[in-house]
Image: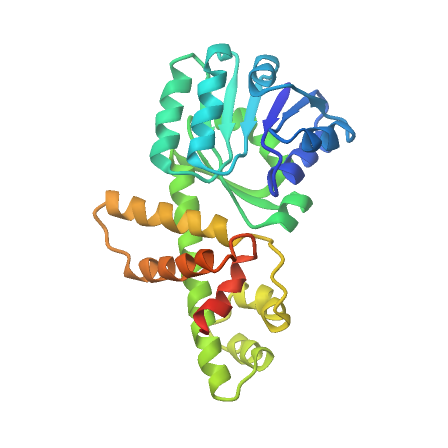
Length: 284
């Protein structure tokens, strides 16, 4: 199976590199930044001049791009070269409605389409230990599962097209609210003489222990917010969640409050920082 990978960003590059290392057939790559393509070529991939060339040469086309509009652009460009011999798999985190519409367009060519967003951050992408939520036809899922295993170790088929994305958005909404709860209670503890490390140790004795606090306490203490998962990416996911909730006729006041925090973080220029920098925003 010849694989094409479109989008070599913070997550896409290490994900693709794992495929290049582990796959025994050609891996084609494309990104709008030529330097990123050449970096993967040096590691054994085959570079392409554009997404259309990549799609025409590949049996499995994987896309990992930032936003819904980028997914629309990629698939609009490659639709003419798709047919029943190809599977498309978008691993971006985008609006589920956009993904469902894209799936319909792809399937009209005879090709299959899967949404397969990932959870965890860059270190897991590098280690090949991502969690992956998949939506789409079971047959297509079974065909690509060995490739998914190059990138992740926890892989689950959630149902029809769009269901992988719905699960990803729910996951990140929960993370964002856990994060905001940690940030608020940590500040309250600090105002009353309890430092970050003491707080984290005490929390670990009860039911409040969580991955966000355990993994970010040192980052917050040192105030070193190099991005593992950026403010702008989480802000995008929070916005998608609130739109999905609105479409579903469901109020999420907790997530709406988180949205206000992220609006402030973006307005203050923290978009490229790690999402844990919202600890500073909550403390203002």
